[in-house]
Image (cartoon, rainbow, N blue to C red; front, side):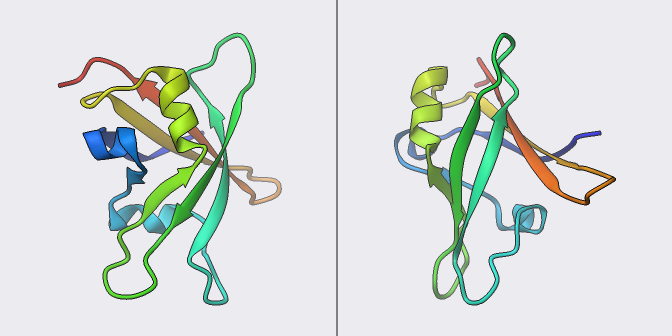
Amino acid sequence: MATLVLEKKLTRTDINSKLSVPTRCLNHFPVFGQGRRAARLIVKDLGQTHIERYWSLRLAVRRRGYAKPVIGGEWRKFVDRKGLKPGDVVLFFEKENEATSEVSYGIKPVYGFI
């Protein structure tokens, strides 16, 4: 069963640049390890109904001070393809495969929130 790990109402900055992620959500994403500040996330588009689509996103944190996590990579392509606007919401889910303990991620847009 998938678990909701992030529900984010999009701001203008999220739309035009990168998605800002609350620091409290970091424990749901891969550990960077070995001094790395970024991790690649292959995320299933849960808003697609007729084809399977995956997005290559990049979660990164600052080198010093407050972590300020952001998601980039194909984020802007996702925003453009989905026609997202400020006030819309994105939902991130994680799902653990019980047999392999591998974690997969999904993203779903929700339109029309103000």
